Structures are given as C-alpha cells and as structure tokens.
Length: 150
Image (cartoon, rainbow, N blue to C red; front, top):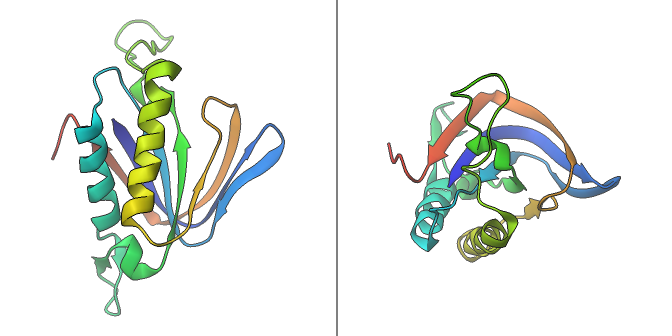
C-alpha cells in the first residue's frame, strides 16, 4: 500500500458534483492499494501516519504529530499511485488492486485511522472521478510505501 501525504492548510474533494470531504489544517492522504497488500500493511501505514511528526512545534521545528497539532485527515483512494511507466508513454495500472480487493482494504485503513485518531477523518468516494483541491503547507509532501519501509 502506498500513501502520498501532504501537509495542508486546507483540502477538499468533490465527487459526482457533491462536496464529500473537507478539512482545515491537517493531512491530505492519497492511498493506493496493490494486489499483495494485507492487514499488516494497513496497520504499519496507519500507525506511521498518525505518529508522523511533520507539524511545527513552538520553536518552528517539525516535531508534532497530526494528533498533537490538532489537525484533520482527508483520505482519497488513488489507484494511479501504482502506475508503471516502464514501457512506452501510456501508464499501466496492472499493479493496482481491482475494486473487489481494494475496497475492503481501503475500508480497513479508514477503520484503523478511526481507532487510532481522535480528529476528523473525511474521505472521497472510492472509484469515483473526483476533483481534489488543496493548499500544501510548507510544502510538505511525504511518500510512504509499506513494501519499502524506509
């Protein structure tokens, strides 16, 4: 499972013409699921996400977690995080899990966040065409991949 995390001063998502999620200060999380992802991948990423210290403390150092900073989380499913551009110019998405595999794992990830995080969690609509708006704060953008734990 892959997460692209952006620290934001605000973010929102519109799906099918409806605002489905909006946050103020917090994290915009784009989540991509592959065929080999498991509950262990979800647990690792969930824990890493809520404990990641990327918010500034009183001295201006990135030393606070999302919980400590009092922020919110907006999670958007994004299969294109598993795009392969190895051959040609048209990306291949065969590494992305099909909906019947990805939806239960995406829902487990959301549940894990709800179990470990007391702030607001907003979402898009899985599989929908969405328009995501954000104001990246910093900018701070971090890539996490449960298959490449760094």
